[in-house]
Amino acid sequence: MSDLSNVRINGARLWDSLMEMGKIGGTPKGGCKRLALTDVDKQGRELFKSWCEAAGCTVKVDEMGNMFAHRAGEDDSLPPVILGSHLDTQPTGGKFDGVLGVLGALEVVRSLNDLRIKTRHPIEVANWTNEEGSRYAPAMVSSGVFAGVYTKDFAYSRLDQDGKTLGDELERIGFKGDVPVGGRPVHAYFELHIEQGPILEAEGYDVGIVTHGQGQRWYEIRLTGYESHAGCTPMPRRKDALLGAARIVELVNRIGLSKAPLGVSTVGMLNPYPNSRNVIPGEAFMTAEFRHPIGETLDAMDVEFRKGVEEIAKAGGLTYDLKEVFYYEPVPFDPACVEAVRRAAEHFGYSHRDIVAGAGHDACYMARITPTSMVFTPCVDGVSHNELEDIKPDWATYGANVLMHAALEKAEIVS
Image (cartoon, rainbow, N blue to C red):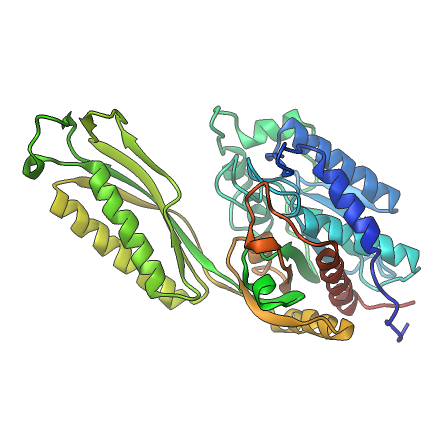
């Protein structure tokens, strides 16, 4: 089939699927709370499985609960082209983060069936377990096991806030599969995702061509001072851990600003102790993170941060414990896959621009083992990880059309 002008996904069906999945764990503000390995995650998985089987796919679940819906290729012995993302959400998440990538990939399969298009390579739709990391840290742990970054035992041992392990909860909901994790060839991987930022919408682009994933460094810092009476301790004699933490917040922000526009930095958690209105805080726990697509710059941010924390602690009479708890290198996506996405966007006449993925994605781990790229769609006001997260139906259609054509280039149409 050389004429691909009419090879498009069914946008209305994709949107209906997004809205139907959004009912599972739906929140009053229109978002979703479907934390990994909860009962509502199980419901979402079962619905996804039923849809895949109705589309003629064989669904397999590996030992990490990663789901793979297999559409046979003309030569089914060839490694698959995998398309996918995740169905788990943040506690106050939206209906599209991750879900668009899973159901957009399923819509590619459905539409190929409608159009009776066969491919030389098989195509698989993936739902990765615990991408968000909101219940179990670290994020993307299951695609990380697939790519050989983490061991299965490490992943199984992760604890949630109630002391429940990831492995036990996988088994409890019935999605601890028996298929080995990874260790098999993958021809290419593509992931459709909302941007989770404001650039595409603000600049009026239909799709983003993702060239890199940002590197990330996450830290936990515990500052220790001395609790004392808020009314009776003179200012010069205080060892205020919260004051030190506040200065670190400012430090983190300053470092991020100095590496703009690509560099970003955040303090997401700050917990003082004993958290009493008339006690000078003697301890503070906080997190910090830095992101940048260039490794040397990310390393420089790390050096400046460590030096600054040391100086702040010394000036405030505090001791500190600083740990880097998560790191992955900046990810340059495969140039040929990036160009496949670009050609697909140009085929449809969609306006597009190159863009860097600011968030972590399963694609960043898949890029370690197979040629990989991503397709971004705009999201309204750049809002994500929020119940008000929203996209337009046309954006979903554009992104899935690009996903389909990039996948077909790699999977090779035979009829």
